[in-house]
Image (tube, rainbow over all chains, first blue to last red; front, side):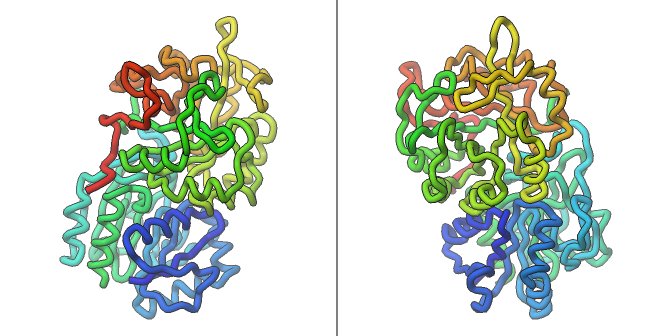
Length: 211
Length: 242
């Protein structure tokens, strides 16, 4: 699978690039090779919501992503990249890509410190599609690296998502969506590119599931 | 109340003129070697997180990029200030987090601006202090000898700033294995993750009162002979390989 990495200026897209290289995947960088052919868009993490939205609008990335979704290409978002797929976020005032209707919200305060930073186990929550069986089975109770203060919550999302998506759940003073697959959208709230073998495995499995 | 999450053990790699050293009171003491090799080994061993620290002048971004290219662990970098363009370049070199220190006291507005760009969670604040006549004094400056004020009072002013976690670094006990300054935890009220640094002596972190430890002795001084060898403690490793 060939990825088009959207290299937001404040993101850790270089870590994502190394992750794809380690897993022998091809990629191009949007800022340099936007006309290259690709199979999937990868929206990396790290950054703030409004700044990333502003950059996407200035560079025409928002339309590029929407057009790619319409063409049936896979869109994979990591951390902030996943949150950008939603309509909006409590972190900012600007509108997200709106590929999914729903608002990303700040994690509740409580015993778990916010931002939620560190290695956390995730739980397989909804398994609706056979293609994601292996992802959910092998990731269940496995640890991934998280670094976030905001998250998408299942109850805030559109009905078609809640009835059709495959999901992994994380917890920090309440459950949130740690990863999902819905139509041709895949999101990770954790950082698979920094989660060692667990992250490498999930990449391979997602590629197989969406090939 | 304790956090429900497991304690974080973060490897601190202090780099002077391109070479990693085990420090004692923030000064280079024992030669450890090439930081590229060290970060590679730490990643092979499933190190939870790495903090790359440049106590004096930081190297060029090309050198940092080479170190970060082998670091498969989430990595924070300290010593580059808060200039937005420099920090963006640092993130684009492969860093996940930035460690801020002196700007906390001299230029707090710059941290707000930085948070607007990279997000609160990507900012780690290091409060460096020395113990003097029984008091914990926050220090700043290139030689960490500029006394800013009492730690307990200054830390209370931090929650209004936007950052993801706070590292309380006791310079007096850095590299000494004299024990962490656990008493400070009850004196500091913060809703952010609290990490302790300085003096860790391999004691158990079960029922630990902070959220994690940032240290180097546990990774770089191996066994009874304190051999300079990179060895991340087995019990804190995450699964790095098949």
